[in-house]
Image (cartoon, rainbow over all chains, first blue to last red; front, side, top):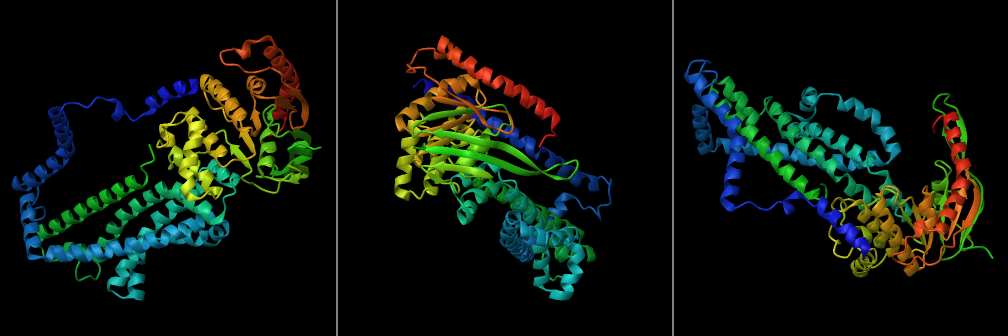
Length: 280
Length: 273
């Protein structure tokens, strides 16, 4: 009994603050949220305002940097004509298949390398060489081997996405708390169950960091790949627009790319939160 | 007749590589340990730091094997880890992604308890350690004392005959430690487990142990086993300030004192391993 009395306050201390702090009134909360939201978009609004006014005031050449409203106009025309959807679809299909393949290959491989020393010894030097080879430097090789079509583009995305996932998965497995391994050993857990019940769940947060990094990489690399020999895709749109001097369309493509990047990252962050809710 | 647990002339050596000379040398953690523990006994091991206390516990837990001699459990040599012995670690070793309930069930899963029986058993043992109502908390939502309670519940739940505790309360503050000591004695009396408990605190050793085995500095041997007769630990009595307690405390302090200073000299002479 005494023990419980001792223990309860300790929990109260460690309870997350949202339980303890009294909730403010509804209007107050709305006002707070508004202030926060304004703060968050302020910098972006300033950027857009500068973008809009600078060309109009003649501070920069409006031909090379058209005002933001012109770009929006071009974006809208691309969107209504269906071309934007086509290009976005083409890009997303490549990016997601490359990314998905990389997750499917790199996570199991990373687990193997992280856990089995012989595998690490065998593959270590090879990984070191490839890891330090810039993905885009291999693009010409892939084009030669796989042709100029979809395969080489998906392959380059997959290649580039593999590294952050692989390296994070390896360090996730190696970083599993040794006390937990001792615990598992003391209850005679071995082989598959050790992996399933201890190593895998312990590795999830670090693996997810790698997956999130790979998400960003998948879009970065894709756009570059699409600038070489593609007939659709956002990278192609940007590059082709520049060639044809359709500058507003070029910017429209760039904006779309960054919007996709932001959304993709947010999706991955949300997924990560879901899987690691046990962390503080 | 031999005891429930017997160490028979146990020696454990480790191969270590000297960092400066890169030569392989041998390092003897414990040498010629003879010790018997009876069924249902509460035995405490104390010794200076680096005397091989934890090595003895690892040997019992089957996490390592003796270089010489034998470690017997009910007359049979220990060949590896097993669920007839439950280990409680100093750093709790809770799985952070599982709730208190889930952590206790982890032991039950390892023991092959059927799925349907696990939740009930886990709750029962969380209740035993005074954590009823905290089943759904994750470790980061619990205080240090409560985490160690969860770890104790986990080790008890799969019903091992022996509980091996490696300085389980060392990381806790003084008040939590005292209340957990009482709690442990209560649980021990109720469950009748054999407990082998490691500590470097003389007070803790005298308070908890039926017998206290004092180890020498490295290589560890059993210097003397002191039986503690303090009568019943009735609630509300400040046993720690009684004259008898002080006598036992002093006796063990004397036994340890020489060893501690020897251990400190050793540490200065030998490069840290």
